[in-house]
Image (cartoon, rainbow, N blue to C red; front, side):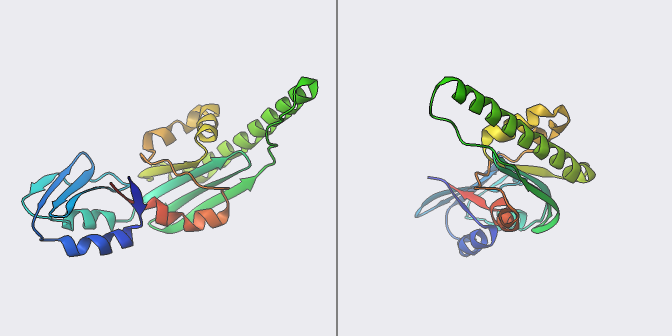
Length: 203
């Protein structure tokens, strides 16, 4: 089962393995280390560039790449709130968060339920419009320099937001493979986000 480990902790775990008996394969954005205790497959969040094979456990190229800082955007959206940020390494250099009430689903039937559904849809549309405006304003100044974008929150909400604004289609082009399922997007979530942003997937 896969799990994500912060890059500093990943480096501490992997460093002692360097040079030990086994085999290493760097290919397709992952590093596979075969050791007497079993195999480890690691996938960094930012695509692993190194391609090579070694007849020993050689973690150096992986450690070098996961230690690199990147300029990355983050767009976290749920029905109820959003958080947009730009990280230079682990430093948040631009951000904007917002909230807007979106009622939960109405369980009863009838005309009142239909009115409630329409009101909920209007509230959701307003929030996604706001989130799209903020994403455009915060990220546009960095668009030519951003290496990747982390999308997170609720998949459906993020997808609807991007579909509302064709000019945000570039977010998909730079999106990291991992979708970050975060709770209510607030400033505190952005402040903690670098740990997840740079976490390495162990499988």
